[in-house]
Every structure is written in structure tokens, then in C-alpha cells.
Length: 415
Image 1 (tube, helix red, strand yellow):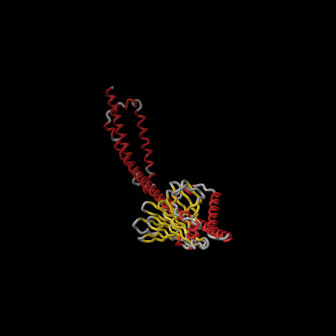
Image 2 (cartoon, rainbow, N blue to C red):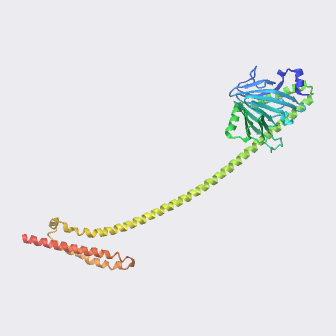
Image 3 (cartoon, helix red, strand yellow):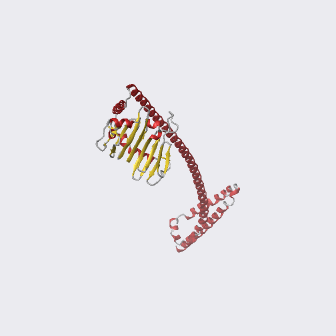
């Protein structure tokens, strides 16, 4: 017989027990009271949580309903037979967020837990999932367990459906959206921004400082209520103990499975990060090598340009020297136009004869040097030029000497 048939004999429908408040943060209320840890939750009670608040409800079949901030959740149907684990759970989310971890009823029959939302229904199949109901849209996230879990548990799945179509979430951390008048979107992997949005709704409970002792008290209260319900149904003490022990074992196994899955996911993420970092490192090394090669090429190009500039300067220097040599020759012919030559002999009037032979002596030594440049065969053209210069110098000196003689003769005549 179903749990409801027994409950109708002893309790009214309004007072049918569904579960107990295990943890709470902020202000969470029902239509008639404000909830505290250890309070009972009854059928058809609406749970209201304000902003920055949340609560966790432990149901009699060991299912866990976590109500997020700014939410409104109602338990519409709860039928449970502790002896066979048969039953049915139907909850509705009018707004806000609800996170569900299925219990013994879903393990026996995966299709026995459903959550109704304004845009359709969510059918849980022995798993953990979260839904967010906002204006005109509902987002649903499947958390797990996965297909290849270590304890061989049934893979989790959520079926999102309405009049327009269906979408099955069967991969952990896949998400779908439902809008009014449209079929559910195709399943896709959740993004970081979406995951932050889901976690934000449960932030109040994650921040609440619930001690281990308080959790134990809540569990003990839930067990007491279970014992009372089982006694009212006619079960003996030994049967009640065995049922509770089995439920505890299953609960432990479930927790272990979740921990192992989380560890496996963390390892996978670390491996992916390591691979990504390794690839980035290789790319950076390649870029550094290319950069070094480019720098070497640039340095070589610069050196080549410098060498070209030096060669050009050397050529310009040689040309400049040649031009200077050519320019020196006509510069010595200018003394023809020198009118104030009369003033110069005043300083050298006393000894003009002695200075003349001094200028002639270097002329005798210079021809000796003419023989030396004949040895390098390649530079035969260059030593020929100085000959002209020396001839020009001698002619200039002779002219100067002739002028001086004329000037002396004129002076002597005047005297």
C-alpha cells in the first residue's frame, strides 16, 4: 500500500510530513511561519527564500532539495513506501533556483521524480541537477553522475520536455534552456559565465557556517521522524533498524561516488591545462627562435649597410683628397694679384739673400723620393701628379725671386 493511504488515516493532507530542514541561511519562510534548522516540512507547503538566503531540505527517501536565493518552491506530491522504496515525488518551481539530489525513490524508478516549471517539466533519472526559473525562460544543468563512474552507478540524466519537443541531458555539465512557446534548446556544454550564474544562486548556503554538530542533529531529527512514521505504519523495531542502516549505507556510497567523480574531473582539468601550457610553451619557443633569427638577419643587414657606408665614405675621401690636390695648384698662382707685396719685404729687407737658398734645398731632396713610388706597379699613375706640383712650385718661387730683385733695384735707384 502507498504511504498516502496510511497517512490519510492518521494525518490530514495538510499535515503530511515530507522532510526536515537540514541547513538554512538568511530568512526562509512558508505561508504561516519562518523556518529554522530541524523544522518539519509538510506537503503542499510553499517555501519562500529572500535574496541572499537559502535552505536545504532532507526528504524522507534521502533525496535532497536545495532552494536557492529569491526562490519559490512547492512540494506537490510525495508518496513513499520505506519497505520497497516505491513512491513518487513531484515538486514545482515558480521562480528562483532548485538543486535536486535524487534519493531512494529515484534509484528504484528513475522516472518517479519530476520538477514542473512554467515552460514545461524536468524528469530526473537518478541524478543531481539544478534549474533556474527566470522571466519567460528556464535553464537546466545536469551535474552527474557520468556514464563511466567508478561505483557502477546508473548514469544520470534529465529529460526537459514540453508540448513543442524534448531534450535529453545525459552528459555531466550539459545545459539546456526552455522558453515559452518553443521547444527546449539542444544540449550544450556549459560555459564559465553560465556556471557562475548557477553557483551564484546557491551562494547563500555555501557561505552559511553550518557546523558538523548541527548537521548531525538535523540527521538525527530526520531519523527520528522516519522511525515514528514507520511505527505508525506498523513496522517492528528490527525492521526499522535494518531499513535505516540500508539507507545510511546507500547514502555513504553516494557521497563516495560524488567525491571520486569530482577528483577525476579535477585530474582531467589539470591534464588539459598542462597540455595547453605545454603547447603554448612550444609556440613561444618557436617565436623566440624566429625572433632571434630575425634579429641576426637585421644585425647582418645593418653591418652590411655600415660596410657600404664606410666604403662610400672611403671613396668620397679619396675623391676629396684628389680634389684638394687639384685645388692646391691654382691656389699658388694667386700671388700674381697680390698688390701689397711691398709690405712683406720690410720684415725681410736685411737678409733676403740667405732665405732664397733655403727654399731651393728641399727642391733637390724631393727628386730622390720620386724613385720610391716606382716600386708599386699598381700606383704608377698617382706619383706622376706630384711632379707637376713641384714644377709649379719652382716656377712660383722663381717669379717671386724675380719680383724681389726688381723691387730691390727700384729701391736702390730711388736711394
